[in-house]
Image 1 (spheres, one colour):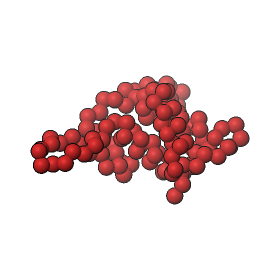
Image 2 (cartoon, helix red, strand yellow):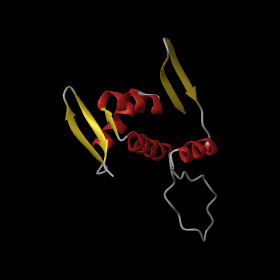
Image 3 (tube, helix red, strand yellow):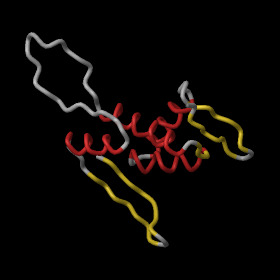
Length: 118
């Protein structure tokens, strides 16, 4: 499930989308993320760690900052909350980004600035 909150002009928007595996794959492909769909395992196939929704959201969050280059903390948190549909999940992704080796966090006056490191 994906919840999008925000405004369109002066109108508030609160949209909830239910996505199946093929929808997640299409969404991931827009950000250059390879999302694997569940396939039945056979006895000769080695077991692989399945890609779950949290992994897909993590990849989308990373791609969001990578494509933006730099975002302020409140702006990034707002986008992550819209992506995840909850404030708590958005904050978890923000903390995970803060501790990622691909992200630099600098003091930007009143708010931190999150920058993607190439």
